[in-house]
Image (cartoon, rainbow, N blue to C red; front, side, top):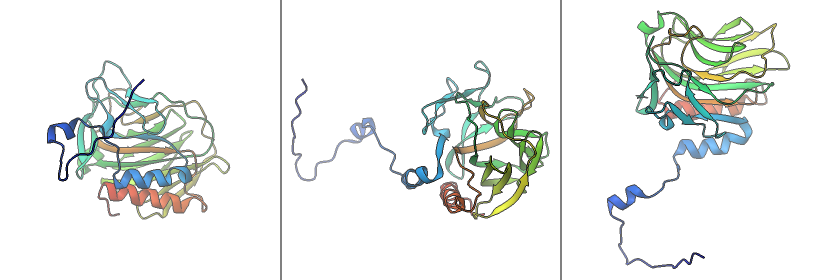
Length: 253
């Protein structure tokens, strides 16, 4: 059996830098602490952090579920690691970087997606591309610099200009209502779809449904929740999440 012994180090002792670098670390950033506080109320089920992505094998673990995110084509080129306002992000390049696909299958029910992203004005003029998606039933497209959420082919734009943004797309299964929540916590748009979002799809980050026409954009943290955060009862939590994400990526509005 293992026997431990407590050793008191002399006053003023400090581990050498090389030893400190080898020590395991727990993420106690303000973002991590506040997200942990909000996780239960928000119904957090997936959290993709670009810092976890391996350029070598094209895979990252989901911090919330333990499932994986990987390149749509195992042998294809993946995104490069870059940054958005000093925070780790992934850069997708049109025609080169394949989208990332979750190994988790989305169940039926309400859901919301929060994300930080950057699209330049020149890139926004290119073909529409998928930024966040759950298979063919629900997707976000970049079209002239905007994200457009679709359910069964019905679309609702978020109305953002090209640039860096954080936002939440929210879907309520009971009413089939789609909504977009802006950085300031207000519901910017609402749309009632005649189609329901089906189960069994997989979340996507980056790319377009037509292979090879991937976007030129940057993607930051990507979070999925099992609640419609635009509903009155959930909106304060959605606003707190956007404040947290906006502060992390230094996005004021």
